[in-house]
Length: 124
Image (cartoon, rainbow, N blue to C red):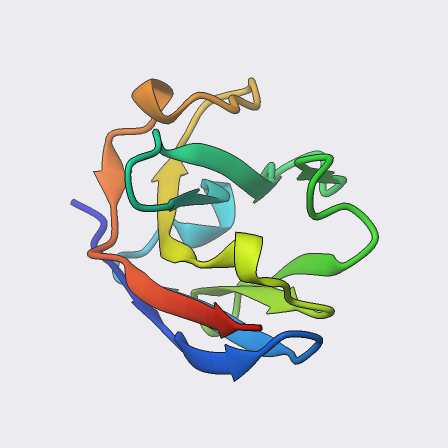
């Protein structure tokens, strides 16, 4: 069973940057689709960015496109989310999730493996 551990969250001023990391245990990281979601207080969890294990092309929510970059290092079993130009609306708990398979999914219900989340707070 794959386990995921996020890190890198924190408090940052608007316009600043953070890089989140999600480290995965297990032997088959390179065959996993890795995706970031976030959940703000009082809101549903939403898709942020993802990388299919085979296609390699990143997927982004419109709200972060052009500001953030998802990447992965299969040698380190880690996926990253570089977040630039942060704004207060980005404040949320950020989760990484993993799944196998040939299709890329944006819905959280399609992912069975989750990390514990890391808090990102952006002050104005």
